[in-house]
Length: 199
Length: 199
DNA sequence: ATTATCTATAGATCTATAGATAATGC
DNA sequence: ATTATCTATAGATCTATAGATAATGC
Figure 1 (cartoon, rainbow over the protein chains, first blue to last red):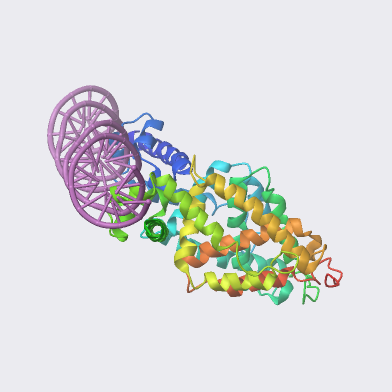
Figure 2: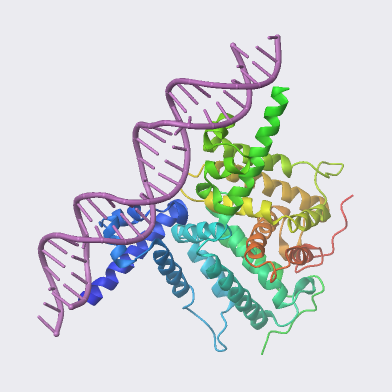
């Protein structure tokens, strides 16, 4: 039973870390602040995660799990509407979005412990987005783009909109803007011979 | 002459701060690190900028100046090719891009001193991008978008591509990707009755 | 006088280690 | 024994203030 209690405690701590990172970034997040939020001393927290970086790793793994699950289709790719609904879901959870936007921003600075994680993840995500686009629209997209060339744009729009929305939620309707971007990608665009839907 | 010497010194310090922020973010940038880079003691630096935040403000003002100047056209708006060439220019200056990407990321966290700056700036930039799009393509864009609705997407693509490129410059061709996005916006897209060029 | 710098230092933090104590599980 | 916590504390930092010293400009 101690085993299970311990896992709960760790999950609690990770949740608290998510919050503190959202508020202060990783460098600004102190172990004491996280510990306080779960009613532990700073040293008590280090019993569960021996270093600050170990805690960050747990936070990043949590995310991996978080947006890996969910509705794939028969061939393993997501449907594109699912992506739109993920954006809507995110729009209801500013905290999580803020945590990972803050981490992404920090991760480009020198020797940041999350840098490798994000580099790898974006490679994956671009490939995954290309697969989704191909499954949805086939090989030829508006503007003469291929799925592989559109994928980084799709990812960029997702991330970029998050920053604008976090800074000024009243001025930026993130889900609507994302839908607008999808409208640009739908067949019939510049160059776009209308596409037959994939079989 | 002391006046002029002083202005030079301040400019030197701001330049050093840009570098240190690129490497460690604002919260991670210590005054000592900046001071060392210009051959001053930490306390000597505080003679020029009385607080760390005052130095940050100077850094942000520098940027304002930096990308406000340059080629507008007769009605005061930029031409869209100029935007593409700004992206090419940025692709040769990872340092600057990294500084402001790191600051943008941090700025969404609680009470960050650059938050207001970025909020205001994005409002401005969206308006400015809408004007550029209108001047270039008129009122109706592909996908049934208006310039106002396309503007946040354009800004998002600019920012989002920067993160992907900073994390993995060999995998992301930022200027080419931006050109791809512009291709999506050119008339003739979905919905797009071909547009007459604006008078 | 003002400007540019320095040394000294106060007062806060922060991460991590060492070692004690109590409770739980075999 | 192991697990969960705590107190104490080392050792680094960090920002900012106080006050000295030297040089420069009227």
